[in-house]
Image (cartoon, rainbow over all chains, first blue to last red; front, side):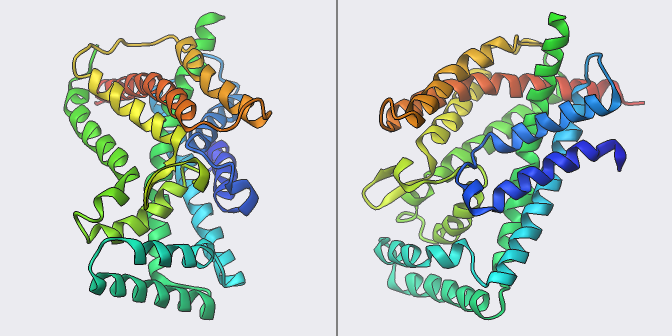
Amino acid sequence: MKKYLSSFVAGFGAGVLHIVPVAKSFTCCLIMPLAAYLSIVLDRKSTGETGRMDMKRGVILGLLTGIYAASFGTSLDILITFITKNNEIVAAYPQLQKLINDFPITEALKQEVLMMLSSLLDQIKNSGFSLIYTLTILFSNFIIDPIFGMIGGMIGVQIVNSKISKE
Amino acid sequence: MNSRNYRIIKPIFYFLSIIWLFGIFIEWAVPFFENLIYINLIADHTYSLVCHQEPGKLITSGLYSSKVCARCTGIYSGAVLSNTILFFIKLTNSINIKYLLLASLPMLLDILFYNLNIYSYSKLIAFGSGILFGSAGFFYIASGMNNFIYELENSKP
């Protein structure tokens, strides 16, 4: 565990940034890669390693940062939704409803989608939990965060190794 | 050198990056493939993980809007562009990181100037600076992936 503490710290930071309303507006595609790079830097500081870094190590650190970010992001999202009985879907529902009504699709499909959304909304407003919503965020977070984490790990190793080459 | 397995993985990776880019414009496809409306709802959350999705910064056309902002659309378009180019040119083993920093400069300056209110947000500038950064960045991702696979191949017992 201690070996991958840097991924844990960076992953926690990225996971929180996915959730906190104000911080969320700063979210961009660079958050996960930056977290992975931070994880590499912290890892090298803690181990005292100064030589060239293996790409494999960087990818593993990036992957773990992504997994930790997804775990924290998903858990916090579920927890906040459960406590507040509110989330981004509830807030965006009126626009979503308008968008679906405007889409040039069949009336039957519109009704089906709107019914599904309104049942999801009812579940969140009443119990603070929706299985469909939970599965959606689980699926998204656990695919996207590790991929972007690994990308950050790959680029991070090249940044670290280029600094060593200069020295 | 390109590792043997990298040559196999490259087309798969290319296909996935095309799907990712297509996903950004999924709303335009919904009228043609109606059931994509369900994927469209999931895509909203999926792309929210990698972009702030501010309505004023999305690429819009009539009713439809992209799932990420103009800058992120540029970054992913640039990545796909470089991914395409890599089918025709040979990937070098290591690329100097200064080129990535140089390519990110217009994007960083645009973010800085926009936030300092030197000029108002321009989707065209955001897209253009994003495409430059994305296309340069992808070469480093590809190089990293190639090195990673090469290391795995050579660490086999």
